[in-house]
Image 1 (tube, rainbow, N blue to C red):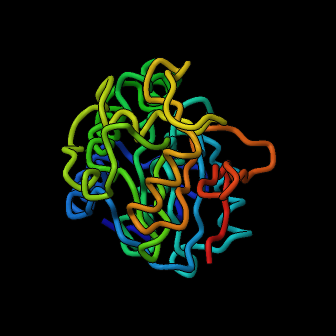
Image 2: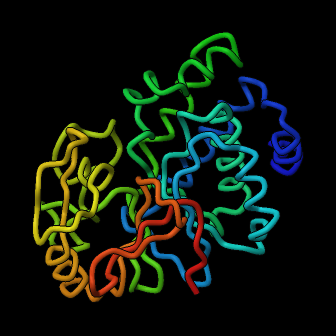
Length: 260
């Protein structure tokens, strides 16, 4: 595997050959399987929200925010679907993970799912670009190995969606079996699907999965786990960055934010 050559190739908008992609996916799975469900990361690090197949925006991010490995990144899931270049986005992130495993952390989002990618575009894109579903199969197998969260300097928890009524401590995240398709309910599902809301505790989510969670739930979770902040993605915020609740104990990151 000539990772540097493959990185240049994909940055220029070309695709890896099908057998090259298969080799890459198998290689990255071996790296990801070693990661904790709560992967420790040191600052400074740039934290990014949903990319959704916006390959050119991702390339612009690297130009302005710094390239790996000079800049460390956490990508909080939803790499694929909706945009037209999900394959390129996921391929370049896998290549960077393979080449610089300590400098880039990839979290799972609710769209890193076989079910959703068959509806929201990634499956069709792989079929169109490779002429079969093999590339989709290789990539979706990697989804099952992606970590669920990252913790920066022990004080900032990064997760795609949000909190769960079944999770009071970070240690409860550590023991989740993540090597599977995202379940329809339960703690794993909630981490991927939940949203903060201007309420105190819990409410049913209009998404049909996960929960709406409020200010008291968040401040208690942060207090119990000695956290300053929960950092998450999963929603569009026009400002790019939106703090929730009076104590600013949670932030939604739409594209990127540098946490020093």
